[in-house]
Structure formats: structure tokens, C-alpha cells
Length: 468
Ligand code: ADP
Ligand code: MG
Image (cartoon, rainbow, N blue to C red):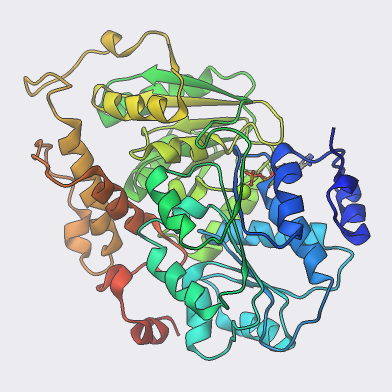
């Protein structure tokens, strides 16, 4: 059995690891840390909750012990897809770096520039950022990136997906080519891996399990339900009520609007819950998440903004109120429970229209998920005289893909956005599946203020003005 002291980490780092109470490295830590310390590029794939953060933070700390910070010249950069995740990694940095006098700057959207500027002026060794805010700082001339020696892209497949890739490419151009690059994720679709390889030079590839394996500690179940909102809500309440061992749960919806609707419904039924999605102001997001972490709020209804990376040890259950459209999201969502070897349980509501999404998930994770209390054949298929399979889920899928674009411009077109979704009509689709993925990815990127008008394509100079 490998021990932490075999990995080449510095004494300061080892002592922090001991204080964290870790007795031995996880497989991804044992695999990735020695390569990272040799200054090799790394592409690390391991299941959710298996210690990927320490796999890059610990070697980074060791490497940073050599050399000094210069004002406005950070030496390492960590990119994260959401503000909450960036903040969590910053906390990890403090924990593992408690014996180091390093200056860490957390650069995330939704909060003021002032404090971040002050940190930068004092000279940050480490930047932990969401991409949009990092670029805002570089555009204001507040930040020179030419001293960055190590670039970490966490949740790498998400960061290279359509919503983020333009920013990632711009950021990569600001950093010396001679940098060391470390990628980590639990999922890595083949088409994204190809893109990832453009950012990596002769990487050490550490795959603890096949990409997209779900954490072994999470029990997974499907729950067949009717497709009407009231039916789904009743099914959700029934399945929540059945859980004797429920301590804390995240309930995922596919859309921000569904998050808000479900929250209201659960509150009406006296379930203690809060919501988290990308259209909320940052103060509310932080408060709600903190209350959830502290156990003051047992149920969190969330969009996929909470799907990646969040490490809340107590989450006993994950419920998918909607089946995720992108199979990878399933792996990340249920990975919010069963972390660091703990047990967790996940339940996914499945309506007749979701069968194909479930198939895609089962294919991705390479295993069948069982139904409790009977499969879809036990659910009456309603209305419209069409067989559920024939109401092409393609049609539905398009709809859901299109919807987010509306959400994004909600502020610009409130009247339209408030309209209920039109009745479903299957629309023939010619676009490749990949396009779907891209479009939906664009929507739930949330590290910046809710885009208005130009959406993601708002020119940089206007962004600065709009946010000031
Ligand atoms: P991932 O990024 O792989 O999803 P995290 O880095 O968030 O996982 O770690 C998940 C949890 O495991 C954290 O609470 C962390 O403190 C804990 N952890 C990390 N490394 C170890 C270890 N070697 N032994 C025990 N617990 C660990
Ligand atoms: Mg992680």
C-alpha cells in the first residue's frame, strides 16, 4: 500500500495531510501526484468524491515552495466551472497549505472587484478562478499571467465544452507555453478528450476507473412516474417520505424555472428546502449553500450549477426530479453523495418520455439501474393519442435545449420568458447530437452575471461596463 510519504511531497505538505486526518492516499492521488511533482502534464480521471482536489493541490504546494511571488504575477492558476466550486477549492488550498505562507486569490463572478484587486496587488501565488472573472481582471490590466507555471483545469470536460472553450482558449494564450497543465474530471467524453489533448503535452494519463464510472458507494435507483408536473411532484414527495435515513438531499431539476416551481411546491407541502441556480444573486447562492452545508436546510433544489464538484460530506441522498439530458451530468449529480467512501443513495424519477435518456445514461456508466416499485410499464401513458416512444424524445429534447436560451435572456424579454412552454410537438431534428450538447452547455454556464441581450457573445468591453 502506497503511503503519502512515498509520493515525493514536501514535509510541510505531509504534515498538513496528517492533520487533515488522511491515513493513505486515494488511488488518483497515488497515481497523479508523483507525475505532477516531476512537472509532467497530467490527465487524471477518477470517480466523484475520490480526492481529485488534493491530487493537484498537494503537488502544487510542494512545487510552490521553490520560488517567490511577484506583485501581480501569480505562479499557478486553477480554473473551476462554478463560483461555489472555486470557493471550495480555495478552502481546500487553505487547509492543505496551512504550513505555507502563500497568497491565494479567489477570482469569481457575482462579487465586487475591490477585494480581489487588493489581493492581486499584494501579490498572489495562486489564482483560483472562474474563467469570466479572470478575463475581466486581465482585460482591466490588473493581472499579468506570464509568470504562471502551473495551470489546473478541474472538471476539465465541462471546461472544454462549448460554454467555456472560447474563454479557456483565450486564457491559455495568456500563459507561457512552457507551463505544466493538469486536467481532472470524473467524466471525459471521447470528443472532449481530443480537444483536451491540444492543451496537454505528453501527459501522464491516470485512469483509476473507466471514465464516467459512478462512485461505487452510491446506490442508484429509478422511480417510474407519470409525466405531468403534479404527478412528478407527488412521486418525489412519496420517495422522499420513504427514506428513513435521509439526512440531507439535493434535488436536481433540468431547468432554473423548474427549480423555482418545485421549490414553491415543496415549501407549500412544508418540506424545509432552499434553491440554488445560476440566476440567483451571489449572496443568496452563498447563504443557501452555507445553510445546506451546516445542516440548517435539509433539502436543496438545484440546477446543474450544483452538479459538479461540491463536496458536502453529509449529503445522504440525491434525487433527480428530471432525468438529465446529458448522461455525464447524471454521474456528477449522483456524485454529490457517497463521497470519500461514505454511503449514498440516488433516486431518479423517470417518465415515459425519459426512457431514451435513461438508456444513454446506462450506456455511459455501463450498467443497468433498477426500478423500485415497477418500471415504466406500470405508468399509465396519457393523452395525445401517441405512444410515449413515438412522441419523440428528440422533439422533447430539442425543446428543452431551446428553452434555456429563453431563460438566458429572461431579463431582456420578461413577458415572453414568463409564458408557459408551448404544447409539445415533436419537431424533426437534423442537427447532430453534439450540437445539442453544445447549446445546452452554453446556457448553464453561470460564473458571470446573467447575460442579457448578447448572451455569451457580449463583447468584452461592454461586459466590463455592464458589471461595474
Ligand atoms: P473529487 O474532486 O474527486 O470529487 P474531492 O477532492 O472533493 O473529490 O474529495 C472528496 C472528499 O474526500 C473530501 O471531503 C476530502 O477531504 C476527502 N479526501 C481527500 N483525500 C482523502 C484521503 N486521502 N483520505 C481520506 N479522505 C480524503
Ligand atoms: Mg473535484
